[in-house]
Image 1: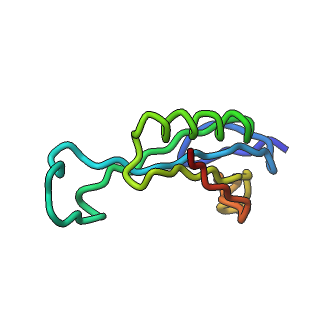
Image 2: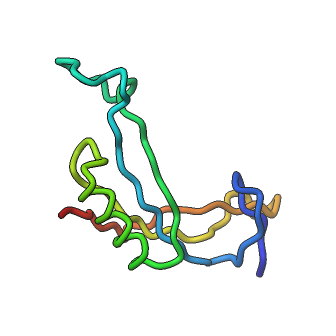
Length: 103
């Protein structure tokens, strides 16, 4: 069954799978600070991929470039699930299937 997925405003199959890659960057204005405020000084980034392999490969590339604040990236399996079945709106929901990418 195809459903409307919010907030992307696209239609996907209920139960469709994708893999979200996420990592943190230090904002340029925070460079050299003695204390980092994780809420203000980090920029949270993510991207979505159709396969776990693609997400992991991109995560390895990002970590190797030194583009992550913590030196890791995280790949999370997501599935399309109901946000509001009554209204016919779905969302990408995280699963417990997570993998940390390190080099």
